[in-house]
Length: 182
Image 1 (cartoon, helix red, strand yellow):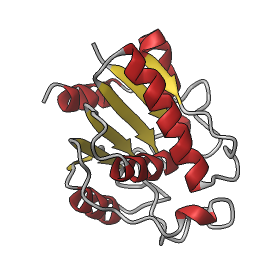
Image 2 (image 1 turned 30 degrees about the horizontal axis):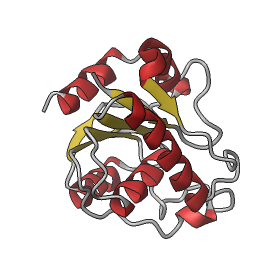
Image 3 (image 1 turned 90 degrees about the horizontal axis):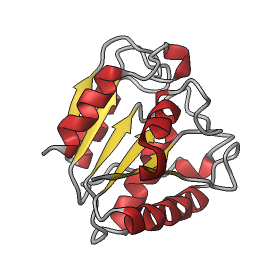
Image 4 (image 1 turned 120 degrees about the horizontal axis):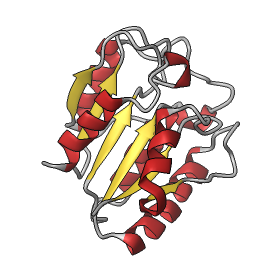
């Protein structure tokens, strides 16, 4: 068994987002972070929320996988680097935004501006899109390289969110399974 920590981006993932659909499928095996600062993200608050969700998930199963989207990728990587000895089954990081890119939500998330990609203490897979408005494929591939993560370009899928029309995103589940079955 695996327990999953769901780490959405700003404002959480709506009802049609693949993270929410997967969370429903996983039932009690999934725990979603719940920071107080969903709309005005504070990195420390989000990292603390990842810790709380991880603790809850770890009580359910000793193999925990982080499933992050957008700004949640930075919360996940920050948490992982602050907790290198916490056992994780991996980090699935989808559509990390570029903190130095023109579309980054600087005013809404100023505490995320100084994040940097550093080697992660667990296996990771970064998935990007050829036309993500928040991050070029080159920047996302660079984050993957610095995180020492596998890189996968999913094609032209926008920000890989609800607006992308992915539904339950079967290809994403295959990618996640490839990470968890390593």
